[in-house]
Length: 274
Image (cartoon, rainbow, N blue to C red; front, side, top):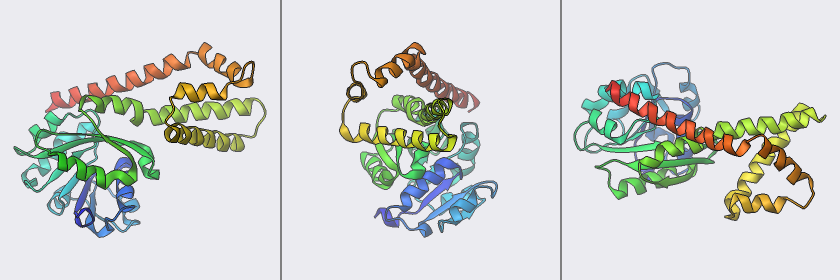
């Protein structure tokens, strides 16, 4: 049963916190989770949820069946070499390191290790994340199904080929920051026209939230919803014309492309280091 599964996190950053928070929204008890980090800076957040914390990565692995490795890409090789002697056939290792390929993960762990590559995003903290994972060569369909079941409280969870993971990083992992930038710009536009900053930021955040929920729940293409807001000669079409003049569409596409390429570069760099 998933509720009885022992789960470990190596790394205590935002992604680990968001995933752990989502898991606890299900049937998993805090006592079945353990988190490690080299410093105590972020561990307090986990302790407040009743999760056991430690500075020992090996302790986490030995006490877990499913291990999330949620560290920066440049640290992944050192962490995996440290825990490799303790990874057994019972373990499923889930990497959240941007750009690090399944082939690299499998090479740094014992033969036949069950590895999954996962890319979440920051809204997992609010259980509104977008997560995409790909299974390694020794991970069975049931391993993927089990992970999906465990993470479904974190938000949208999908499985796909590994080639999509870096694209997802650019679209959703980095895309969250792009949305924040746009929300900030919306609010600043309102401030320019005379609205108080606090109110402008509140309305901008609600606008982004409402637009996103409607887009998700309606099942309509973004272009269709956009057209439904526009009326001939109305305010929206004038505003959209200004956005098009500013190249917002091309800039957004280029941002996703740049972030995707950077994710791939990080992966190539990690392979070179290994």
